[in-house]
Image (cartoon, each protein chain N blue to C red):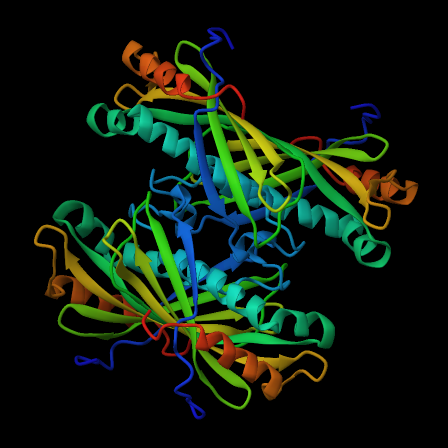
Length: 151
Length: 151
Length: 151
Length: 151
């Protein structure tokens, strides 16, 4: 993605999520879709922090999920507590890349899953993608600056 | 519930839902919450038919789930195809009782689960329950009249 | 249920669960089935403590969910942190009643949902229900004794 | 992936899945994880057909999900009926690539989502990946031969 910025990718958002028993499927480990739900929660925490969801209500501008990738590194079981970290790792004109890493407390803090989504800022009024406003761009850089560069 | 009517409880709505592999939990059968999701789908099909969801958008009046009961009769496994039936079995002033039966194709059409929810018609403008309008009441009786009395 | 015991119903198990964004449905509050998944997690924590899941693996004896009831008291939204409490409130010969209360941090610790399930101890070898062994019964009373009687 | 074979990628498996109301999230469209659950169902239908799940029970050899990619092309709403197609598009020594396309009946049969997973055949006895046996390889080519090359 064009527009990669060294001020991005600093993993500023982190949240803890306990595994639910019902997250496991009939192979006796957490179903692969649940990791993506956890990433989504971290994404929404990030969006809350940068005010993107308010823009959605006030201006009809909001993020759309265009694609995702995930690597499954280690299986997870109930009970466990996961730490989910998120960062915006790149921004383009109207798109952004958000990355996630999920760590298992029971597995000594080792990584269980990593993923990346490509999001696009969408204007629901015009039905088209729209450039990321400078104000939002600055807010994201500010949030990233609070990260530690170390997921 | 007061207001029980012999014109109700005739099981007019029926929908087929294939079991997803991911519906099963680590006990290797369909998780108990999935039956309630299936009932919810039948409920929304019923609501669509009687126009209750449109009232929600136009007038801010809509149904609220107050309580539910379910009996788990027989376990279900992937693959299978379920038939989910729904009926409004009673109406009060502002509340209604909707019942569900879920049948398994693989288990010779035998019942797997039955449930009942109590719903209340709610006015989001006033923040209070509101009487079921006569128009909606008539529409429900009309829908029920298309049922067969035999779930 | 016969066999009610004043040593039961003391709410010994409590667990905290953050709301996931994906727990919300298109009515913009947490879907009604999610509360039951949270209760299930508290149930499994209880089962772990009383050793019932080990009996399942070693002897083929385990709990079956026969029925459930839930009352929805107050809607829940992301983000929030729920406290889920569980207690065995009654034991019969081969059955037990487990109750749950779910509290919302954001709503000043007020109750959002309460529920009760009826479980039956099942012998997968014979395909029949089986009496709750004295050893398990004692273990349950011991666990309950650590509760505070105040959910 | 090495081992690409022109006999693969012929889309032999197809299954229809109705959208559940509860599949929608608070943005009023089907949540992005649900598409992956649908793909998983098609994957399990494929696995059933090629006998891979039986190998898991009899020999402790089974597939592991290593990674996935998905492109979200068009949003989906309740009610709708999806057609989910699957094909093994490539096989390596111990790995395979399975692709999916999901079509919406309500949107004139247009594609809503496409995805690809990388699976690895795993020997749970040794804790290592294991070569795909010739017998399974032949069975997969046989299944693919029933496809139409046109998803």
